[in-house]
Image (cartoon, rainbow, N blue to C red; front, side, top):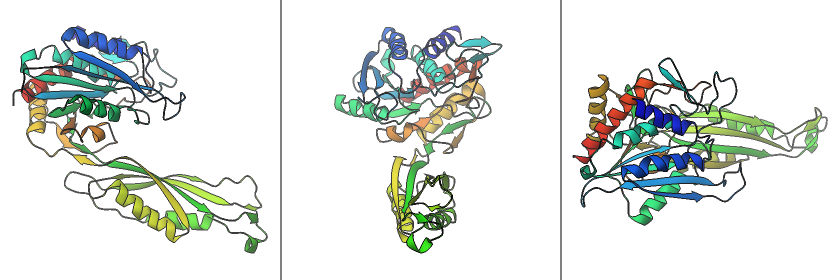
Length: 378
């Protein structure tokens, strides 16, 4: 327990608000190199700080097994969300109080990465190939993170057979849930152009607001589906309405809104974008979509059974296979190999006083060891 706790504290003490670079990767490399991993680090993005193109650091590490052996990958991220205020102790000065370890990244997801590193020291080198796919840009735009790592892996000929992402998937206690898929995500910016004018002379103007309201009314009434065997129903939410108008007696020249759709595998980002675009066009508006991820599913089978058996052996809990929640970098990794997410309890992620049970770190490390050994022994 002491060793995995210290690994977690070392990572958490490196301030790494997204996009992460530098010291946190130095620490990760220093942990992996003595275990026989070949570590490659590279940076993508050349934009200004705060922009989507800001530099992002990534790390790929691999320890080769015998020729022809299996290849199992751990994946995750070292960047964290900004800590905000109101912490009982400093966000980047990890502290154990009682049986909990407090600090930003405790569960999302430096704690899990520490467990992965601790786990592989107990996996024999001749069991097979193990790799780490670790980015500094999961909490941000995700433009130059895992996608860049996938490009690097393809260029170097590295292709895992299976991949486990250490996102905090557990809900009430460690082991009660794993994610076998995720819904897709698309954000769409709506805009209606009008003609500015005086409110007393509406015949000389064209008010865009009623048309935007008509678009939003149609969208609010839209039922996309009722769910599938493994996915909950897709949902469309209106997330912003903006009419830039500082005068009470002026008809504005434009009206804008934004919607966000989380969708299951009955749809694609393109099909939904086209559907919303048609509704906007009907009322004289436009729609600009940005698809941040497509839905994916790793159907229950051998991989999920290996994870479930490892969890059961260490906790006595049967993990529920689920596709609920937000997106993760598994949406990119699924193009490489089957991927499942499993990690710590998520109750405090992104919150003030984020914390993990110290005992859970030790237990998760043992679970990860079992999973790696069993996957490579297939």
